[in-house]
Image 1 (tube, one colour):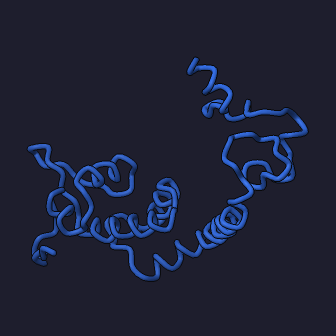
Image 2: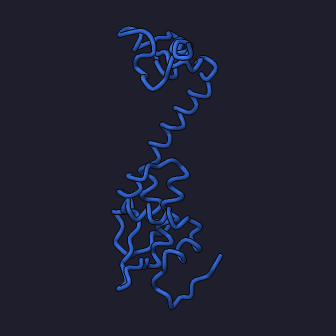
Image 3: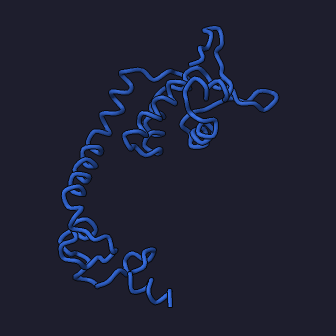
Length: 162
């Protein structure tokens, strides 16, 4: 991993990419979403403060556990500008995500436990489909796969083939 001399206080997008491991396109995307910021030189080139390294690491770690970018942006907005997020910041901000992650873990456990009960047809009226239709809520309103218009039933596929 390339080292950045202490006397360099700003990084080009290429240097930030090389040091953080994030693609240049990802860095541009993060900047467009307000996750990191840069200043422009007279030649319109991006320059990132050294704190951008830790912010990129913060974003990537949060993404790995499934935190949406909007939530990450809100968390980073709580930090002072141009200050490197530290361990205490990460602990405070990630604590707010704990309940959301616990709920996702429960949902994944239910998915794993009931995966064999679902035939994946998109039919939301199956009484036993605990994945798409717990307690057959949709079956009381209507039958068939009309609630999932992007998916075709087997019968629709057969008809369009003829």
